[in-house]
View 1 (cartoon, rainbow, N blue to C red):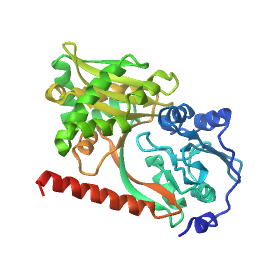
View 2 (view 1 turned 120 degrees about the horizontal axis):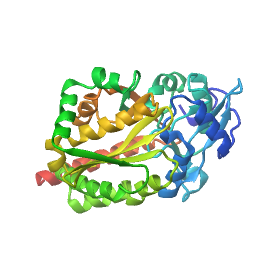
View 3 (view 1 turned 135 degrees about the vertical axis):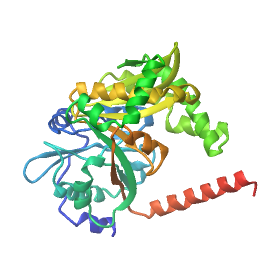
View 4 (view 1 turned 90 degrees about the vertical axis):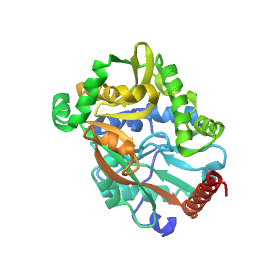
Length: 361
C-alpha cells in the first residue's frame, strides 16, 4: 500500500511540532509505564550527539487526550529526503506517549496517517514493546514491519518477590558467588564512572571482533560511529535523563559496567561492557543487574526493561535467568520507496563477502 493509501486510512488530526516543553512533560508524567527514552531530555541528547533536529509531534485525540511522538529528523538532506526516526537505532524505544497511557489502536492509526502525509522518504518507528498489541491493532497495512524481541522483568511485589520468585535459583547462586568473591558495585548518577565504562567497552569491542572474525581496526571504526564516547558522556552529564552507571570491581580492578535509565514508572538497561576474563569467572554481571534491579524496585518502578536480544541467543538466555519475559514486537517503517528491501540486499551482500573473506575464497 502506498503512503497515500495509508494517509487516507483514517483522518489525520493537525499536529504541533515540535512539542511544547510543558505539554510533553505533562503527558509523560501522566503515562504510568512511560520509558526513560520517551522523555523530552532524552530526545535532546539524541539531537546533541547525532546532529538531528527535534521533529516531535503533539496530537489531540477526538476525546481531547494529548499524544506525544518523540521524533527526530536529519538536517542534511532537507525535509523530504532526510530520514525521521522515533527513535534512531541505538537510542532505545520511542513510539507514542498517550495521556494516561496508550490503550487505543485508533491513536496509532491517526498518527501513522499523519506521518504518511509528511511525504518523508522514510520514517522509522520503534515502539515500547509492552504496547505491541495496541500498535499492531492500529497499524494499517502497507507499513514495513521488522521483527524484534525485547525482554522485560516485572517488579510487581517488590524486590523480595522478584528475588525469590522470578530470579532463577542458579541466578541467585551466581549473585552469592560474586559476593563471596568480594566483587563490589559502585554506582553514580553523573559522569564519574563513564571513563571506567569506556575502558571496558573498548575491550568488549575487540572481543566481539574476535568472535565475528572482523579486523580490530574495522571493529573500532564501527564502534566509534555507532557508540561514540560523547554519547554516554552527554547522557550521563545531562542531569535530567535518569542515567545511572554501575561498575563492578574486585580488588580495585574494574570487571564490568552497565548503564541503566530510570523513569518514575520503569527502569531500562541501556548499555553494558566487561572484561570477560575477569568478570566471567566471578559472575560480576549477575551482581550488577541484581543491584540495579533492587534500586529500580526501591524507586517504585513497575518494570526493568532489559532491551532487545536475538531469540535463542546467549544474551537472551542471560536475561531470562532474571525472570525477564520475551516480548515479540515490530519496528515499523513508513516508506515512499522500497528502501527496506534495498537495505536487506546490501546487508546480505556484506555478509556474503565477509564469509568469503574468512574462508579464503
